Image (cartoon, rainbow, N blue to C red; front, top):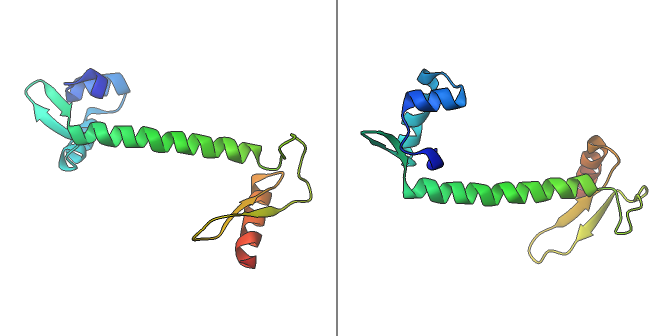
Length: 119
């Protein structure tokens, strides 16, 4: 919406394929949150929306990095599997921190639970 503003309900509905009654409701919620403001030509993003979008992009990039880390779980620095290592504790000044390993996501979660239980 930020790139297409101002934008009306019907145009937004056509561009997204979302029914106009749902678009209307969503815009009302965004307006109540202070993320958009109405204008005679349609909705426009507020400054706080642009800041929220920027923060969202930053968080999304962090999630993508974490996803890549999860994909690499179970492999050492040399690319060989760490078949016998279930978890390792990592240094953290104020809390406990660990990395769990496994061949499947189920095994990773089991090993994470084991690491937390042993704490």
